[in-house]
Amino acid sequence: MREDTNDNGKTSLSVWVKRQNGGLWFGICFLAYSVLYFWMSFDLPYRSRLGAGPGMYPRWLSGISIGVALLYIWQSCTTQVFRVGDCFPGRQALKNVAEVFVSCIVYLLVLNKAGFIIASSLLLFILFVRHYKLWQAIALSISITLICYVVFQVCFSVPLSARN
Image 1 (cartoon, one colour):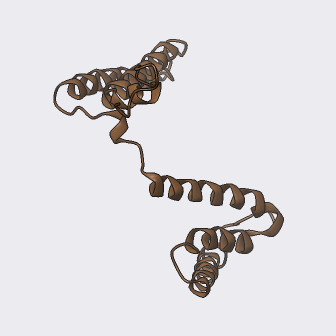
Image 2: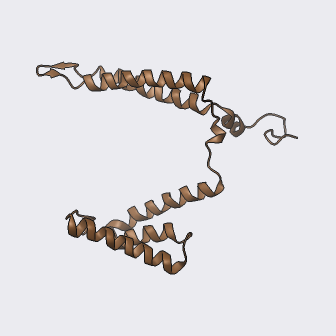
């Protein structure tokens, strides 16, 4: 029995999605987005008493985007066909993406309570602990955070959190 079929012999939804032309679907979504903004640009005046109005730039940009979307759809159907299944990350890559996402959420939750140095050290530690020895991950996360703090807070006077 083939792997892409279920017990009834029908292909599953995930297999159907993985077989689709990814460029075509992206092009259709980009075309819909561009048409929506083109339509919305007509709510703004094209001209003002000083010359170009606030509707001129979005109208031209979305019009050009419609042309680019149509060109991309044509190209993705003729020369550069790729399947959606080829775009999915593997298990390890998916773990890496989840790790970055979770560490950014932790950073956002901790930043205002603990401050820049602790939150940034924790963020970098979460990212480094799987790839370095424990003492190296701690040393790297603290040293990189302190270097960023000195450069931005001390040298450039950039406020790095609400506590500063």
